[in-house]
Image 1: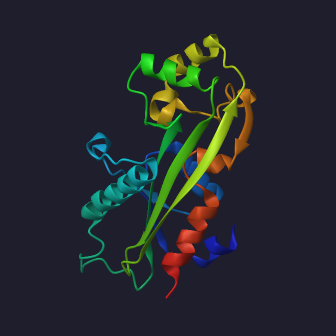
Image 2: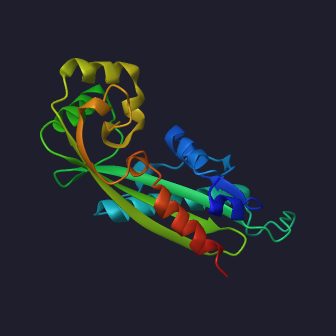
Length: 211
């Protein structure tokens, strides 16, 4: 368990994400947490840049979850002064300047993945942490760049048939055992590519816990 995880053992942590990858990363970091889903219409939120978009989506998820749990205004909730931290996040892939979200169908997924053999893909991710006890909130952006060897068509077909690509921004799954051998280089961390950068998350938790 990390030192920060030890410091927050009395804190209630809510992860506002249904992503299995984010669940696994937060567990690896040594935190105990509960999970809530925001259930927002992500397509209804649009911004001009990837950085603005992922932060706007993290904010929208947080607002939706706070409406559900009403921690800030529900006087019947007594947490004995212990912090309640809400963590939300979002991620898109940027390919040759174009923002990519989760593929909507097989054709788009196939096209996305084939492209990564031609030029690098970048991930742009946000993390937002709100101390629901004090109202303090901090957010940040993390980016990576991934380069691939040529990806065989039969591998792409296997990934599409499996179906997980439809739940990943840009259909990008560098951690998948079939895909990882085709990653030639990565600038950034694997946890960032998977949707929850550890260093950024720890830094933001520290910030919202400061007096």
